[in-house]
Image 1 (cartoon, rainbow, N blue to C red):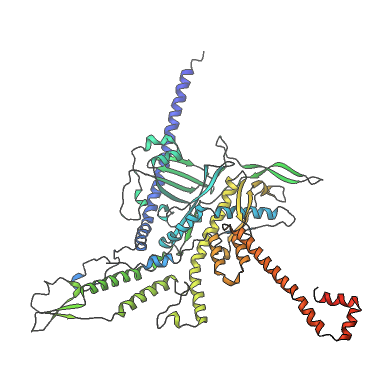
Image 2 (spheres, rainbow, N blue to C red; image 1 turned 120 degrees about the vertical axis):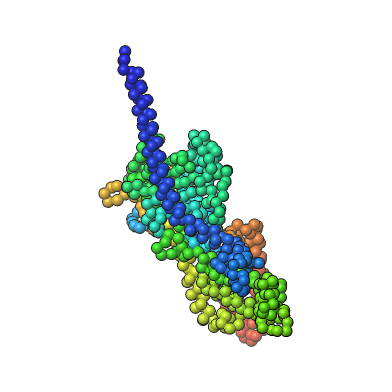
Length: 633
């Protein structure tokens, strides 16, 4: 009998308790360290959030006048007045720049082996899968939202993640894309690009049910009754509100000493997830898997039968944070860019103030009140809009004078401010394909060549924003490729558009991607992924239909309905068949008319012959056949 067994059990329990206490202490210290860094980062981020609130209000046409007011006299310098109405040029100019097309990827291998029959198939597979991922409704919706977010707030954010719980009939797990608001993405202070950051934060307010469903039901008791720490991030307002329905989930993305990506997620004082080396592949025991085992074709035998064997390929591990930033106009030495509302703020404010003041003048009239000095009336008349003026007139204590101003002065001022805003953004009449009908200095006074030059210059300025969008989507597709190699071990179907408009189906298969180097080691090849200049042209069915309809006489009926059939227009095949039958009937009738016209031609030839020539033809059958052949008989 082991007399020490009770003591061993007690010692084991004490050790477990001590280990738990030590682990909790380390977790608490780690959480406090990152909370301090978050607090410092938020303090640096708050001015940007305040600007986002201002720019959002400007985009939505706030009547609040900022940056000072237009003073009518000394008495109203302390009076702040809101605009009576808003001519919203901010909304007008931003919406005129919206590009709903999603850039499509082009893929080129960094190394190309002409003797490898799989080389082109690999390229088509990678490009087809990325093209399919970029054509989904999710990314189309994100693109539409980000087009406005980036112009309003100077930048937009893409976030790529892998959802292991997503299921289909033949596969489990899916790469997903979201677009958190730039207010909710907190960068490392003093670092201007995500690729150079050691850490960054992403905060979202979620319900308790969502948190328990995502991170585990065991956290419900600890978080029940808690309140969100950063509920104000849900509002584009500087005022901080409380929402009892949500809790703040903070993701801290950071890199360890090896440069590997790690994630620490918490809610209030509870750590929800602490994943070291987050993108590493692990088995059920949590141990790191260093190699993928893939059934790959390694050659063919003497009669051409493929030879397959299990090979080991080093696991692909993404090394970058899963965030991509799209800039409106980049700003040097700053993580944040330049927004359109910020650029045209002065012009928008001037239009609000001047038009509102003019409207009030029209309502109240253009009269001015003149009072005699020392009458004491100047302080009793409080209508500053009419402007009370003291004079030395000894006759009348009060005199009202109507001072009308030229009506065109307001319109000219508005046009000057609007043109200044357009010039600042590069959104001119020429860039929009319109001609300014105004007199003096407008584009209507320019020659055709001058208009071409002006259009090219303004298009070049707007191309900066398109370049930034293409750069962001290039990084997004590169991140997609990283995630495809890291997470899509099973074959995945994809679909692309063929040259004739009909779908082309393919399958993503990592086993077809692997290559072998000169040393005999297997690896995943690298690809250059970029956005080509012609990808901005829409390829949707509505665009094709409208373009074909506008072609007019440049397309005949059969060509038009061939295009309609290619995009699946209802009953297009039946209409095309009927048009083709009509054309065949028309050709047959024309041929019949030609044949019917031959006897008349023969009669005219016979009538023109002399009796000797007729006798010679009648006595020569070969000559008769030659004449009929030439006439098509």
